Amino acid sequence: MLKEENIKYETYYKLLLSTGMRRGEACGLRWSDVDWTDHSIHIQRNVIKISGEDIIVKEPKTVSSDRYVYFSVEMEALLHDYRQYCEDEAERYENRRITENDYMFRRKDTDLPMTPNTFTWRFKLILKKHGLPENLTVHSLRHTAASLLIANGTDVATVAGILGHSQVSTTVHINYPHTSDYLKAKAA
Image (cartoon, rainbow, N blue to C red):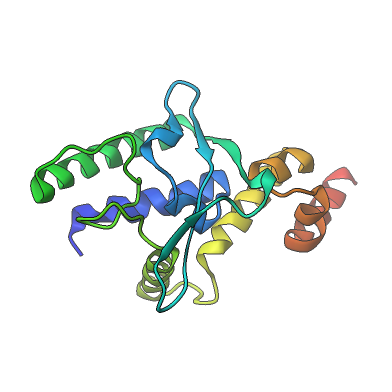
């Protein structure tokens, strides 16, 4: 992997960590989903790949999963750098300019998105290379995003909306029980 290609993976993982997106939702992003003025991203697609089958781009997991997430000024700078990287790559290898309809995380020489498994595989390599716990997953970034939001004082209903959960109870009881313990301790 070329050193400059690292920006693709850095952008993907930081996007998940900062917004709580699901891995397939990030793969389904098109450049047109980014609203630079509002610092928001419209999540409206999900990418799945089943072994031996074609890549499937479909609607998000639930109705509430079709949502907007917001990004920081730091994330905006990384997204701009990554967009420039994508433009340079398209021009260099495909002799074309990227369009707003291009997937942000696109397979080279195709109009197809990259698959979540590509990022999962790369994540495992990063963990191993740096001696980090190998039981972590890309989905751990989503859990971390939720935990950080709650620890920062964001109410659980807002966190549920950011994550695209249709019920607040999913956020509190199923995926993030340790955050409710944190909130109890903080309240005390």
